[in-house]
Image (tube, rainbow, N blue to C red; front, top):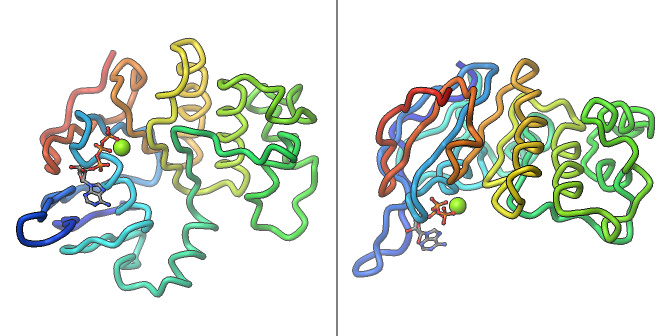
Length: 222
Ligand SMILES: Nc1ncnc2c1ncn2[C@@H]1O[C@H](COP(=O)(O)OP(=O)(O)OP(=O)(O)O)[C@@H](O)[C@H]1O
Ligand SMILES: [Mg+2]
């Protein structure tokens, strides 16, 4: 298993304001594949993704990545882990307006001398090389999100975490972005949070969350 959570919870506040965003979740995900997390608003999907990726620390339980306990790592080691091994895609692409699409992808590169050609190889694989020189102001929402996916892939991460990557897009663009994410399933692990089950067709497994609990594992959609 690449990633494992052992009875993790995330608690906010105390006394009257005590809320559990995640309750006692145990799960395991392998080295590669395409996995979905579904559930209603406020059910804890984003919180679970942030715990798995070390962006937040659980208040109870532990997260294990390969043979390392993420919950025991220093902030410095965690930052190195995230930067070298993980890629992130969020609901909004968060591109820098004064950089070209290619330069935006380059901002995430960890190798000191990642050449433009290496960026262009990834853009070509994702069929968006023609957008490389454009400024974000001249890209559509769907195109911007495709650039954000390329940026998440530039370091060939072992895991890509995506939180509602298609929520701000129309259906056609949403499906196109999902195809790019799915194409990574043989190179690494892809975990996608979404409200929309139809975006998860062909997933290896779909986790369902409700009120902080990992409810059951749904059969993959056809
Ligand atoms: N910083 C915070 N302080 C207090 N409560 C929080 C905080 N962040 C999240 N929560 C609560 O934790 C619960 C889970 O939130 P989370 O954002 O993980 O849900 P979600 O499933 O991603 O929802 P959505 O689909 O709307 O994005 C919610 O009840 C939310 O109000
Ligand atoms: Mg969320």
